[in-house]
Length: 535
Image (spheres, rainbow, N blue to C red):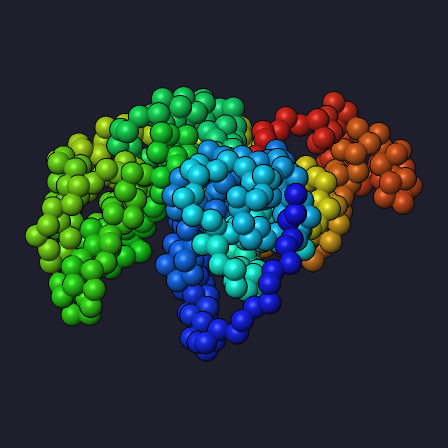
């Protein structure tokens, strides 16, 4: 069997310029077909149709090498051509040998070549078969083959070169498709990973730290309502973590894969809040040059969180009531009714009952929002959770700011426990972040905490601190910390502070330090910790 045949001398074409122009035109169309879409199979069909239309290809096939090692017909055009149903093995048939060797093969007369496989029909006239490899990074990944009517004077060398250019263009299209597929796969994997991180981060057990009764009640309420589509109203003082509880509800709900859109009603002017929530049509007002989607449209299928809902005006309250009742609304300046498939979670730190009595908040809207209410307690009412919060924030902030903070001293803990925390958990986190930033050692002391915790205006402790008293307070702080480290052993504590036991005992009596209280004090490392929270 002869694969490469010496053809008779070729007579120069009469219209060589016309043929070259036709080839260039064909290459242009092939390039446009391959670059016009990312659907490779559709592009390959168009390429084979172009070859048939401009170069008389009776039949064309494109085969690609599979992971299994077989060759699969990816696209076919012409009589009896069926893509996807014919497979070859490497080295099997003409196409298999082209892919195996990486070299083109010309069969001038198919009737004289038994190596051709899977002929769907027997041709009525003699035909020629030209097959060239499709190579990527100098390795064959497939083959392009076409049937041509047999002509004794056909210039097969020119046909091979021309098809080689087409095969090279197909290879580049394959390369681009693979790069796009890899990028898409990476994005899908990254998206899946980020969503898993969100679920873990906003898991109900990671939102609020503590074991107090109010905290356990929040756990139960979030678990009960997360899997439903019920409207939720979260009430509590500023800084208690209402937004994070809303996030926990969304990311543990059936809508977790859909958008979670947050809106701070207090941050939007009254004149803009309606258009921000419901969107507007082109020309609805001065400056509305195009239609804009509102937050309800952006949250379609997901959850819309309206923070500080007690601050919205009466006109917007009426429209919001309709959305909750009818699940539909109109954009500002429009007449088209838009359906709303959105779960609503609202939050406020205001007394809505008092607002209703004053006529600033509609009663019907209140009853629509007050379907499932979660009350978030202020930090001063859950002081038992303070140590767990402190431990978590110190670990988190030390990691973020690359500091080696190992613990917090007992006097500093006493200062934190005696403060009333008007800013709640947010204020606690900010206070500890300041302490971490200015601490030059491994232990947070009382003097690292903000002045607001050490002044009469905020904590009701001391009115004025003289230099003598400040030095004494600092010395007392160091001594208590040393006693805590040594479990109340005064001799070890004195050596730790590089002083004598006699001087140490004298100052214990001077400052009224109860050394015995540290004998049963467990080290900070054994203190119970919750995993991770966000406040």
